[in-house]
Length: 268
Image (cartoon, rainbow, N blue to C red; front, side):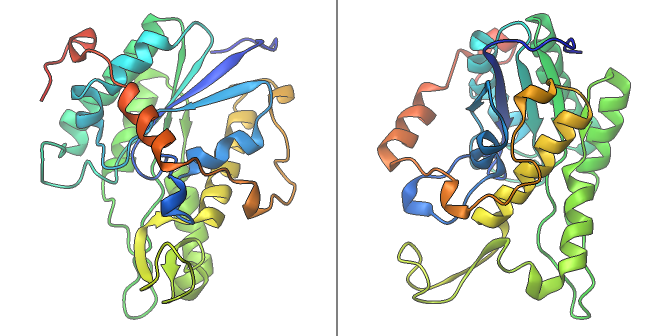
């Protein structure tokens, strides 16, 4: 685990799916929590390598973990959060929770530790799914449990965003969660002129609150020293979340790919 002294220039690398990924300006107000995390950190640079549509398998097999491991250094953190896409049985992304999902997560943890960095598992936030009686369902199934089990087995710190989100979404209910997820009426936003009803992807408010929880847990678990955190209890305006131009996001996405064989895998 990181020591108690502040580490100048420490970086927080993010490996994950669309729940974490930064979104371009053309997709606002959709936002991953990794996009908002820098607002709660100081003297710690966030390197958000998360990729929309990635599973723990495809992220590794397509060289994205290799890029992280080629750039991460001693004392850096690697936050790993997958699950939304691992459950999809298409395009080489699916994993079984207690089999290859855990197998791939081990690769992230061991890869970070081999380089003197510190892995952290973050369970994925739950989707917004309620039955006709207003009861919240948990379509992510066993993936959060599988991550919890592996974190305990490997002594990897765990931030249980899933359990927190279930409590929050359940308390807010079907109507109260509409402004957390990407629900927009026709004409409400120029990027979605016909409106949208998306129960998987967060909008800015949801990204901010998930990022705040992650940062609070990082501080509570002493993953970084207190001096690395800011505004954990302060009101943060949605306008503070930064959206990059589409071409910048595309360039960063394309550049953050290494050689898959560096992680001992063959490209798919």
